[in-house]
Amino acid sequence: MKLSKIGLSLVTGAALLAASAQPAFAGEQKTKPILGIPKSALDDFGGAAGVHAWVESLFYYIMLDNRISHIFREFGNVERQIALNTQLEQMVLGGAVEYQGASMSAAHADLGITMTQFNAVVEAAYNACERNNVPYKTCNHLIAALAPFTRVIVTR
Amino acid sequence: MNGSQGSKLRLWSCAAIFGAAAAMHSGLASAGYNDGKVFLTGGVFTVDGAGGGGAVPWATITGYETRDGINGGIGYTYANLPALQLNVFGGAIGFYDRFELSYATHKLSLNLSNLDTVALVAEALGGLDLGTDPWNSTLQMDVYGAKLRLFGDAVYTSDSWIPQVAIGGLYKENKTGDLVRTLGANKAKDWEAYLAATKVFFPLSTLVNFTVRYTSANQIGLTGFGECSADGCTNDKEFRFEASVAHLLSKNTAIGFEYQQHGDNLDGKSVSLAGLPLEGLTGLLGNLLPGVEDALTQEKESDWMDVFFAYAPNKNLSFVIAYLMLGNISVAQDQNGFYMSMHATF
Ligand code: HEM
Image (cartoon, rainbow over all chains, first blue to last red):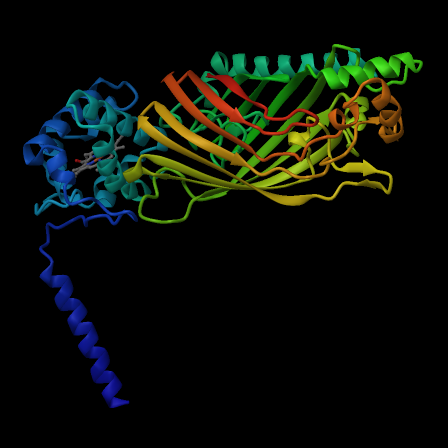
């Protein structure tokens, strides 16, 4: 009886410790695609510079798309989003980069994003890959790594 | 048969689909028209009318709509095989990426000299109605379908093995009952049900689909359902397995293959004359035309296979060309040939 109580408090203590050990700004975790992400994925993308260039193209295409650009004009902050997405995309591709933004659920919860709008961003992502000469297969590794965020980003 | 009524019905269904498509395109635009789905993820136009590959229905809902709206399209397929030509025209509408209604009408022209012989003999015997005229045997079939997505997301759940799963039903109405019975089938009209599971594996750029179909169809119903022999008629449905694998070379171009298991209802059956098996007659004919007995015995029905190439230049149009390996069809062997399909979505 007593022993189990001690055990319990030990577990809670460990859990608390683990939680507090995470830096407050680590708002998002790496996703876990079932087939994994190859070690070379980030390099195939052109490394940090490649990802940054891709994110810039991504926002170029997003802002050209009448179906979604108004959302970003009204609620977004494109400069901040480019910086944070560059971190996030490197992280999900396996780069040793800290993502310093909000969690995907926190960032998008109030936006009421539809599946149609989400798919529009995915189309922009493929256009950005083509524009930056990122091979289709390499592009799909990033799509696989980002796809699980659909659940929390699409709220309508 | 009441041919004029049949064709009127077909015309109506076509008109209905065109009407619906036109309505979606214009008036209803604000009410729910939607084309937000990602390239090719709605599948193309199967010969059953349902959304899927060429022959295999997928768990994906037809059209480019997402859960936010309605979309659909019309399709046309032409297959040219040594002994037959198949024309399929139809359309399908997807509702909220959840539910799908489809229609397809088939015209299969047979150019089989051995069947022509039967028709000639029947005519000579005084006009037995076999549903086949000399030099002109055309099988016709209408297919009505519905599909309901049960659970899962074929595209975005890359961190889970759970596929998108749907159930579907098809009602197939073969309009050439006499010819179908001449070929030994039991019924000209019947239903089929299927369960499909589809998943996109992004890291492999590949879509995989498995389908189980509960059916008694002979050649997807083009030569009817079940069988009749001297011991009577049966129409025993069974589970048959189907699969599609599509590898995307780019976001709008795919290559792949399909497999569809077929039954054995008509294997080794002789063509029958108005309910009379031909055995007696072929014996008699055999003396006149050596080899006719063999020629009128149907081959073992082969499973269908094909390799395909699909290309969608934009969201309103996709083309599929395929090489079909359909094997033995009725009394014809080695039916391999080309397939071309167009699917226009609105
Ligand atoms: C997998 C897809 C997506 C990813 C990886 C993603 C990533 C991000 C990131 C990293 C941020 C910055 C969070 C922060 O400021 O701390 C952000 C914010 C934002 N995202 Fe997304 N996003 C995705 C999809 C979408 C979609 C589909 C839309 C709308 C159509 C959207 C609209 C926005 C807006 C408006 C903001 C700014 C929110 C604010 O500053 O309050 N995002 N997103």
